[in-house]
Image (cartoon, rainbow, N blue to C red; front, side, top):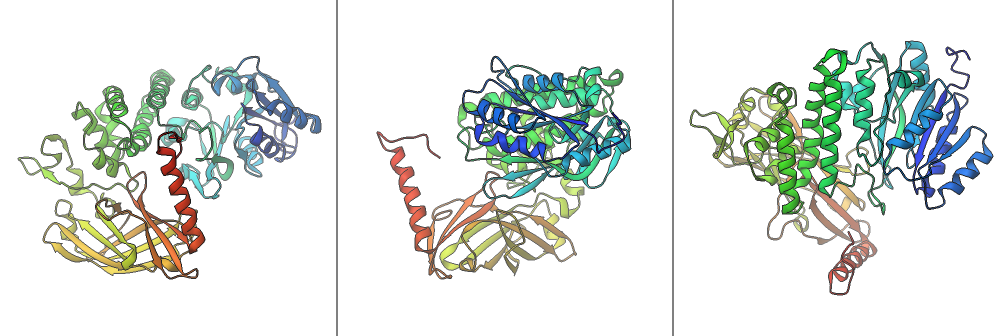
Length: 543
């Protein structure tokens, strides 16, 4: 076989699945559709109890490239089935595909071309997260894939540790075998973390391609949530921490203990995992909060100061609050800091020497960086109150240690963008005026919500200051009597509109619209059904 010829079969695609008959055929077909570069598709059935075996048998009967490996017992995770696939692979290169996702058209060819032409052991491309059923797509770690590149050694591009996925990559099969780069087996969540660390520790040449190669399907309404979405129990976070700890240990042992990738991995944990779970913490129960706080605090004690300094400021501040406080506290305020972009809500305390600090009783968590960072990067806090019947959005901008007043609040551009993506469909501009001298400025924005279709709409702000600075951010949803409540307003093409302002998981203001009498009635029926489920004798496990 000529390894320099991408026309010949070169790739094994390992598809793993368990009880996923509705989706696994689409996954296998997406691999076969990659063309002649895919020499075989090894479908590893993790002892399914549904129609998955029959679906795979039919696919194998129709295309000789499909081979089915059925495990005798369920492994409890994703690692063992992937290892089985690598063991069975006969092609020079291997890729991984989950049964509920698909390979992007041409993705395998793009990766193979890069691997062959660059002489790379690993080729990695862009993954997009596709929300279903809306179809909204969000790129995963797009900074890594803006242009084609060759990374001769992983430590030369520490940001590689941010892409913890194994499925958007092509691996030289012999490279994995020579370096014993395998997945943890058994019920081991976040197995990608450990496998990825083992690959990086083996010092591969890595080719990066800007092409979309993998489509990660996000089904939030599924009866059984994926690992990345099923975060309600503390065991999920415990598993994530343990997998990350193992990955860091592997990277610390690479090339005689080189710390570059290990430090980058810890910084990534602070900026990504820590912020993501902090955004959800206020919505959890007290027992979960206490366990999460203790577990996270214990793990962060293993980090040194340089690890924290390597992380962006929002995650670093959250980590230092956790280390400074023995019990959960300031959860709503931490949620604002964990948002993207970050928002630092009041109060704004100072230490005895006038240094900005987190609070009067946690003065050891200093915020001096807020005095030096460019205004366009500061975690400015804007509160938002939507008054649907009046068609008014009230925005309140808070001072931040004198930086806002010094820049001079000018105007705010408001955009409402459909949650499914696309260009903003409603834009308005309003001027800020002083409310409390040295504390807050307010702007009143007129919104014609009836001009929009029914859907979920996200609010984005662009703050413009007199000194020429701009800052793009979101607004914090303000709760209180009469706020964040449904309202029926007249107007629009269907005569009436149901408006539901609400706070997103990160606390940002968004609005859900249901136009027309049928839309209003549908929302009312769903609301009534939820009430009935909570009554004695009714179901209480609904959304």
